[in-house]
Amino acid sequence: MPANAILTIAWKDILSEFRSRETISSMLIFCLIVVVIFNFMFEPGSSLVKEMVPGILWVAITFAGILGLNRSFIYEVDQGCLLGLLLCPVDHYMLYLGKMIGNFFFMVIMEIIIIPLMIILFNLDILNILLPLLLIVLLGSLGFAAVGTLLSAISVNTRAREILLPVLLFPIAIPILLAAVKATGALINEGTFASAQSWIRILTGFDIIFLVISSLLFEYVVED
Amino acid sequence: MIKIQGLSKSFGSFYALRDLSLEIHPGEYWMIVGPNGAGKTTLLKIIATLSQPTTGKIVIDEIKSEANRIHIRKQIGFIGHQSFLYENLTAEENLKFYARMYRLENIENRIANTLAQVGLTERKSDLVRTFSRGMQQRLSIGRALLADPTIILLDEPFSGLDQSAIENFVDLFTSLISPDRMIIMTTHDLHLGLQLATHFAVITRGKLVQQGLTNLYTLDGFKSLYRKLTGEGH
Image 1 (cartoon, one colour):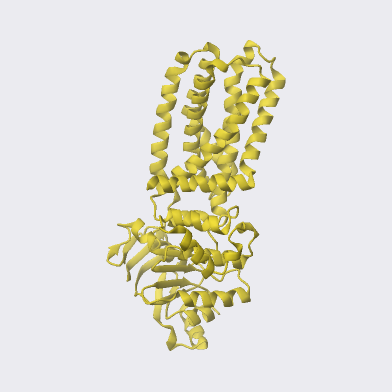
Image 2 (cartoon, rainbow over the protein chains, first blue to last red; image 1 turned 135 degrees about the vertical axis):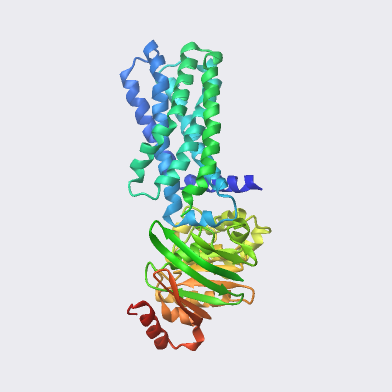
């Protein structure tokens, strides 16, 4: 079953991370620093905060996400494990999907912690729109992880991999980030799901496009 | 049987392999020797379907390897100088991971047998990062044997091992020889290569310059042949 191979890779990444906690902890610390610094700048609960929160949230998610994506394939290259994975009798797009699910999972864990913290620190009254907000965050993170996983596989074999990944990732991920920030802003400022609906549709469309393209390209990225 | 026909691989204008042809039959243990950069690892990677040849083809058991990579990969066990193991997983978890990826049946029994074969049953619940280099290599061999492959590719398997570990591995690699299995090993160690292999191939600058039976040569005789073919002291 193809799904078994995908979940096996994701399971392996999550179990490894559970043991080392290196990726999640660095992502969380970065996120906390961003949120706390912005918290010093704005009056909690003010109208300005409502306008700034979407940007702050996505700055924290994307930059912390990059830290996780950077490490994703470094672990595979360390002991030649990427070669071991490529030798497995499964289509290579399954390896991509397994790694992508692992990266997405780490971003979600970070978001589960950071969103309640932002609600408290910025005194946001958004409990009535929490579910649509979570939907936007999940869709944005999925698209970001989809592109990021592919680019992480490209950059891992270069000398300046930590620098190369953000340089490659941000321009390509702009459609996802733009849709995610706009959808979050519309939702928080208007307070209704309908106001963010069109951006959510665009975000979903980009997620599908990036997932399909990245799955297809992965084979060429990892081959000699 | 592995039939390699007119195989070439180029990276831009650089040819890693040039018009290489070779036939490997079940029960044979080949050592591939040659200087650094001769194309030995490239050859193993192409056999393992990890790299596409520029020209030529490889046919394994009448199946062209490019046409059915997944089927070919199921038959291959690859052991390199890196372990392919995850340091934050235990020995058992590593084997379980690869067993699932190979969609093996009866996983628990296979893992128990494999751990016993490589002498790591006692350490099965320990994280791989706590293992010595020799233990990691033993587990790496277990990983490669888990799916009972008919083709075993060994890429510099003795690299970085101390003398006592090498002696243990010679016994282990000897036990891998069976009438329905083909073993191809790249090595710089001519002494160990001659001890283990039934056949040899010398590659230099991507070209196969000599092949034959190892039992026709003494170590000194083979060293002298190697020097003559490669222009390299050994």
